[in-house]
Image 1 (cartoon, rainbow, N blue to C red):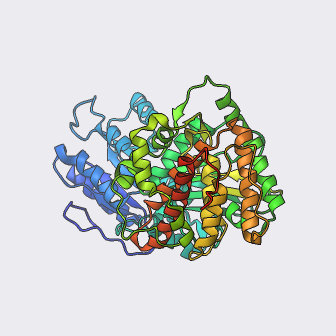
Image 2 (image 1 turned 135 degrees about the vertical axis):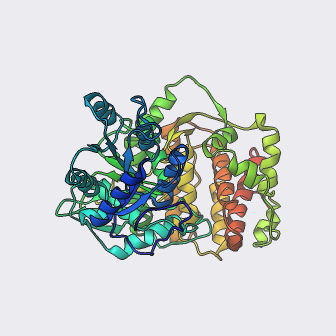
Image 3 (image 1 turned 135 degrees about the horizontal axis):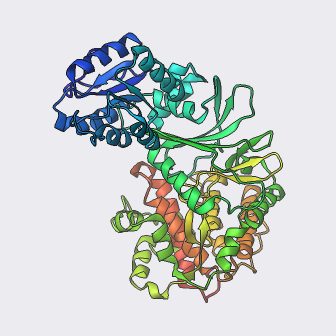
Length: 546
């Protein structure tokens, strides 16, 4: 393509590229033009920075990001060819990761070669070496990092093409080959890769809020057993890897935990690999819940909380009795955005308390106003212990094998949190999504909400209503099991902090829903309102006589 200057408009053709994009950073125009011609001849897509030396570094960084360059040829001495201490090319190579760099220099020696290798640069080539030497190093790098150059066959291709848009719907300039390149780095020896989405339940209900955009796949490499892969935005994968290493790795019990085997993080998208589970079938808990019987679901939950995750609860119970106000604990987990921005600035499109005559008669409070009032006097709130929690335990982050064992994935939010947080989040997901209550069925949700608010502790759970519908009975039985496990694992007895967690969760979801989900938002607020009403009348009979 010749050279590149910063006024050129970047263009992507909407298809997975068959060329490797290579950044050229060379301060001598004659050498730079030679590299452009050579790379074009060899089938690469070169982008050269053509500017004065003082601007080389900044414009090279901009160009690497703008075109998501796979590789880079970088002159070692970019500022002063006569300064033996000038290693600005090496500095640039570190700054433009995930672009993989090959250092070129006419001043290489053993000491500099060692420094280059110690700084994570892929390779280096002397300027006095033949063009074939440079071509060989480029070939090795392209084979390792670029799906198209390696000839990696990923099927179905249509699935790959759709992922980029799902992750970054507002981005018009992200090349679609980045997803394939992530897979190429996760499976460096694969010749063929067949992928399939691990799909959850088909239920879509009123709190089906926008979750962080990610894809969980089964990846079949050549003739090997499949492995679980998560693809998501690069920052989210980086955070998951960090939290897994600091909070989860080596702390779960037994064989039913998924370690992160490998990771790959590019400009926009990243991925993690969880090694094969040793199971012949696997499905999300959301799909398992829909078809499994109550006894099977209870067995799975018991194994997960009382065995796999048990040491994390045990460690929390053995700590000194440091306690936090329950609101503060959730605030620390989710950050200030959910309360300071969403709750404090929340306004109703229309009054929500008009959906059900029974709820109107209850005269329950507006949960948004209720929470604001309580935060102003939070010294009266219940206290909670902290434990290492999963942090986002919903039905699509739990995989179930044919032996009914649950394997958790997606540790992006794992870390210290309210000790009951995982139980609360899973219960809210069951109520609002997995139970499959129709969006217009306010009465069933109201009945369930009143029933959920009855228990004052984890040892005296309410009996199921005699005339409850079969689908409601299953939901109530599973929640009864979940709350029993919450008491056993946490050592807590007072259920008020559990209801506080439920209120925080439904308001987190309600304030995240877009305006088009107004009915869904109102249903979430109704649940929160019932729980607020219960906490206000904790020492009175429940449900109220009226």
